[in-house]
Image: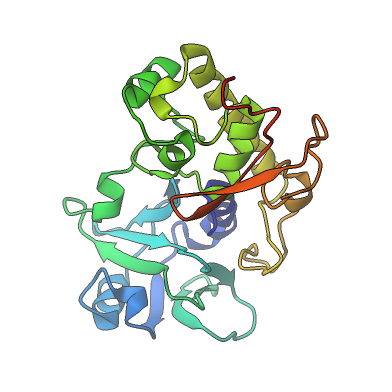
Length: 275
């Protein structure tokens, strides 16, 4: 699933195309893409002839207010991606053409993503529970420590909970925990104040590096930039996807466990459970 860095990079590619542009034609061809409205026809009707104001990102959500006060929201799901202009591709479930001559398309083979149009006073339920954005507005260490207090769930699981900090997924949670030298199975409430600050610092560094390097495109190429290029961050990952390979810090083989059905990678030496 594309995570915060990938969604931020997509936003940067789409913003010059959609900001201030008026929709002159829109088509939604899959019911699941429009599942947060009554159907494709409602999304089309609410978007047609509307002008995008400024495309923003919160966590893994893209959103823009429209000129009539409505809000358009998109989430990439597991495999969704946006394309600007270009050729037709299979699994294109949303097309939007603008008065500036450009067209954006949403391609989503697994249909876990969506495009929705909602009223400002009736935001999507998923956005109502979002925590602070992990990159632009991360919580203060004291605030995060308070949120973790008495939490018995594994810190890896808590980082994936978008209500705690929004934007992190499997890749960057693993990378941040490794950089912070925190075992992914440590109960969240066991972290010290120093570890909490170290974790927030690590999240910032990991996300910034991923954005600088174009995001992480895995071997399935589920994530590509809107211009078709792959991200170049894969080779810079230190633990994710490197099971049994030597830790780049200490040489100990990287291990993998499951945390709430998600693969989780860590160094048992650098991230020893008692540290």
